[in-house]
Amino acid sequence: MEALELTQAPPEVVKLIEGQARKFEVLAAEHEGWIYIYYEIDEGDYTTIDTKILNTYKQYVVQITVNHAANDQWINSYKLVRFERSENKSLVTEVTDRTPIVRQVHISN
Image (cartoon, rainbow, N blue to C red; front, side, top):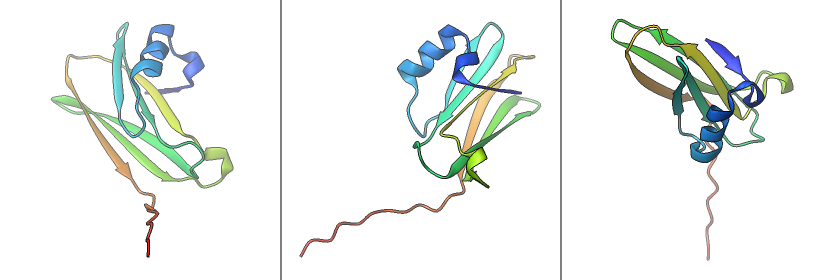
């Protein structure tokens, strides 16, 4: 697995991300034998996105975890990774958010 910046991705993949990516949704695309996985969260949150790819007997499992960032150096609002497809297996994604959810409630009198 290789982590990429958007500027390192092929133009076809960048165009797909710009046109179809939605926050909090996994976008997967195949290009020239590589599988690209993109995940985006709200910008400005003190969080980091970690990605792990498991190559199981029947499928590839992409595990995406959103954690608190340890410091400013690790803050990111998106993650783009790629891996080379070695076999024709299905792709399963799992997203885990380990940050506390703060909801704003409006109470009117």
